[in-house]
Image 1 (tube, rainbow, N blue to C red):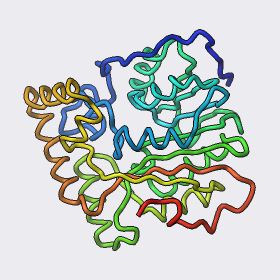
Image 2: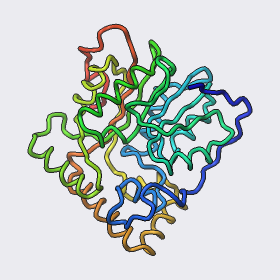
Image 3: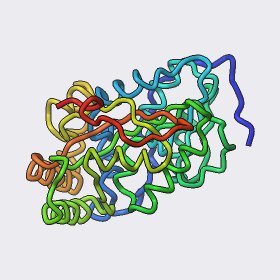
Length: 295
């Protein structure tokens, strides 16, 4: 696959939520949680919000010479931030056909390519990227799929390349199996996606097992649907848009309220985590976690 540079990239502006988004035609009670929120007008679907995303991107230090791959770009919110940095090229690997079409329309003429594919088997060349990242997607994969996706990131990265993740995280670091299973079962039932979360040390270990050495960790509360986070991520107009859809489409509103109640119920055990790791030929094990992560 050839990844092309578009030297005359135009200014990228947000597009509205696509009419034919994933889950289109399904009753809201059957839709996966993230696409349900998108249908209500929510654009930022990351557990730590835009603030944690921006922190991760700052550490990834994307510049003009970087070749960037994003797994599961979704609505393209983070892709838009990345493309403003004018990397040499950007490739988004997205498995949902409707999302691919939306992304291609949104970034037409930019230094971007959007491909239909799976993060665990992107089809891109070995060592073709200097930066790979993905957000809010590993948490919804089983253990084998997590290993495959992080392994694919390692395969795509050149030596010294950087890999970033932004995911849900169990709190505290050594949560009991009983509480873990209870929360995962409740979340999987509510958002209609299998949820398998990890705690901080387990996320770091996952990276290490695939030859990636974590160099930075950021954390944030899991306040995806809290009013203050909505205002920060969506702005006043966006927040009013979501409120309007929830009020005028009760089937949407009721499910979103249930999701918010669930997140609040288990709030002491749910957080957001972002990690940035480097691909190194040396041994990635034996890191000092307390140095990486805030207390």
